[in-house]
Image (cartoon, rainbow, N blue to C red):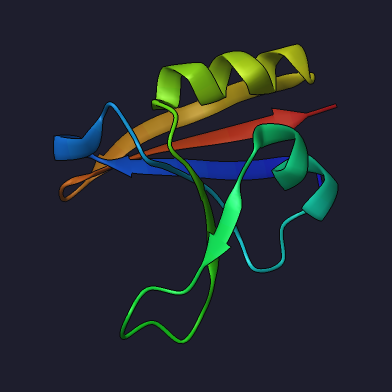
Length: 84
């Protein structure tokens, strides 16, 4: 899976960081130290790490991912990354 979205709430820029959904590569999620959770009221799971987005972005860069775009959506910051 060459594309990856990560996100965090603006008030939580020190972490946790959402790093994947229930269909994400489990090996990559293990490398990032991500844990799967299901938030109350959601009918899907997501992976998260307690690291700040900057730490996650540094780890992903070491794995060959590059930021394609970044935006703010309401109170959420979202980064789109791609790996060749």
